[in-house]
Image (cartoon, rainbow, N blue to C red; front, side, top):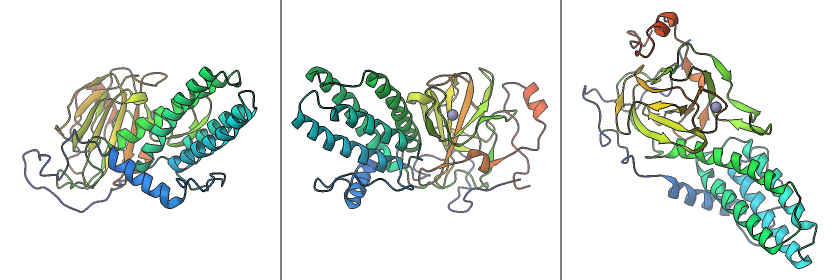
Length: 337
Ligand SMILES: [Zn+2]
């Protein structure tokens, strides 16, 4: 079955590779994060979450994003710690505040992150590290296992930060026109295509805690070729936190594909890549339990889509592709068919 993603919009009929200007994109070095954080802060104020007069004790709704849940957890954490300070360093409230905050943040981490959540993830990381250090220096009475629990939550926070940076950076969240006048069909980034871990909620392989998996894990031997899912401009190529060596391709109209845990990167930011071109090699860099490709798709709002739902499962001879290891398969001569 062929599924098309947001066809239409601008097109470029020239045969030379389009420049950043042609595509209306910011230069690759421009991060979009400060604007995203400012937008988040405005939303938090509208939401009442930043009001010092309002307690954060209202439970977040089932549809609240990761960032809203995390920000409320941090506000409640600060409020309970203020009460603990009045009771002294042996108050049981210190431990209760920590365990409650970690549970709430873990709940936030199981929700789908949206682009403006980045600020909340960064606030969580700074708050947890700084406050734990201060409590140790003040010799307040803390649960014995607290340090391990904080590390476990921080690993999840770091993954969220890496996911959001991969979705946002560098460049712009504004939809860009399609780099070629083809329809956008996403083809398998590895061959053969075997999903080893699906999109959505799952248990974290490191911690056993439930979390949101923002892409799919595809089987692949170390060093196996990774192909561009469609023609694109390379907007990121380099280390990306827990995702290890990562490439982000912009296919136009805001659709991006993300390739993580790579052992090697065979392209660079600003390059134009054709569908099926080899852009990297499968690896296990970053937070990974073994060689595989973590493949993610984001839309023009930076939201993660289930890649399997938007991939065209190729009806081509997979065996011959595997035999021609390392060589890019020829693009489908009839992409509309
Ligand atoms: Zn993955």
